[in-house]
Image (cartoon, rainbow over all chains, first blue to last red; front, side, top):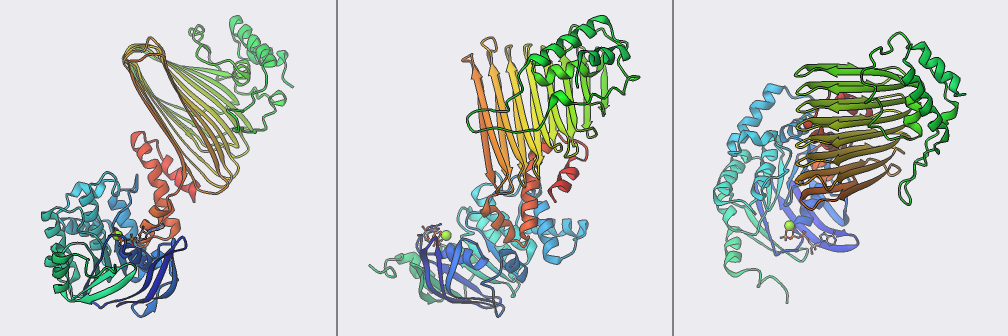
Length: 243
Length: 358
Ligand SMILES: Nc1ncnc2c1ncn2[C@@H]1O[C@H](COP(=O)(O)OP(=O)(O)OP(=O)(O)O)[C@@H](O)[C@H]1O
Ligand SMILES: [Mg+2]
């Protein structure tokens, strides 16, 4: 479903990713771990098509097609989704208004109001988010954990085929993490591919990864199964970081 | 050519009392003497409207609707700053009076088509007045002055929607004198005109007087706006909230000045002002000059001003959900005015705004 080949990315002339190779198959969960500043978010944003991230070399294949030249919205329409590490606040735009606009765009037709409400309430209850949230301005004044939940609500509503979750677990309390993880498992339904960026083993107990990659200094330096994450939790990155 | 004879004829046609003619003539003399406005505010900031006031053609048509009630002569013009525009207005204005009796509730719509108009609103104690003014038809010069006298415990809500054609020079001054426990809420919306000057000033003159001084503007092509809002605190326990939001496209230009002035007598007062301008093009230009003058230590004041483009990160965030750039910009722009429109919604102003932003 998603294949990254020898990806080199720079920002303002500074090289960040130095040849990343990575694959996520349909219905698979792939965890991506690595120390602060190793380039995980850079990979996520470059995959989503952030204009500041320049792709110097390599390919991003999504459903067999190189999406490198596409705008973010075109990538989204193909079924790619990014849950942001730092979601933005959009003043004056309610979550429900935004979701309706996004859904209409995705479907190329106006969604029926009742159908939309039904779907929204269903997803809100799946993620145990109070109904009032839908009428609040998008992310404005949300707590850190609430913002992350709101990202997953967007994922639930937009139903992509491939989701990159950039530290969705950071900032969430223990109950929220369990609820959101269960929600994500429900949404996966054997089809959704997930690239799960995290620092912690805990989320991987809920959302079981098929593979674990470790990124250091812009490269994937090791891959393995979920045991690798446990090993990391015990020993830290020491063994992987070149001195 | 403007002349004294014209002023006399204008007044005579309306069968006005002697004192009013005298005051019109005085105003006309002042108009002749006063210097042309410079439109220069600060070092670099300048607007260049083409006004050519001396060669205006005066329209003297609306004679039969002229006011015949002159009981408020002592108030007429008392709040208005004397300058080239206001004196010319006084010389040729069609004068209207709106009076709300004690405890009366009044809803009024104004759609004055005269070139020069001057409206005095007298809100007697504990009355409640809602006024909606639409300014959207005129020759190529329109001058509009409003005076509100809000007496004890009254409330006046004044919403103005200016959507004139792009050939019009618009000069407007709105002033309120607010007595004890009274409140005046302005919502001044500037959408149209080639050049629009709008001053909105609240004088808080009695204990517990309050004002919300809100404004919104939206400019495109080569429109120019010269906007000023002020709250002058002259009594204890008074409150003001100034909020101005604007969006500029194309080569539109705006200059905004805000003032909260707190006199030494106005202890325990609150004054807030906030201005935000969003620029949607490279060539659009905005200046914001906020001002605080405080002569009493026991007050709470704050101000914030910002001018900026649409945040590219926010745009990317919305686009990552499938919205194309245009739709993402539209959403951000709608959102920009939403918090203001939520405080004071006016009719279909949202539709008019969205139409203009297309
Ligand atoms: N605009 C920029 N200009 C220069 N360097 C940048 C810029 N943006 C990011 N970087 C650098 O790129 C590197 C990778 O950052 P990135 O956000 O991808 O790390 P990360 O792996 O997601 O870290 P974390 O775990 O802390 O989220 C960092 O060293 C960061 O400082
Ligand atoms: Mg990161």
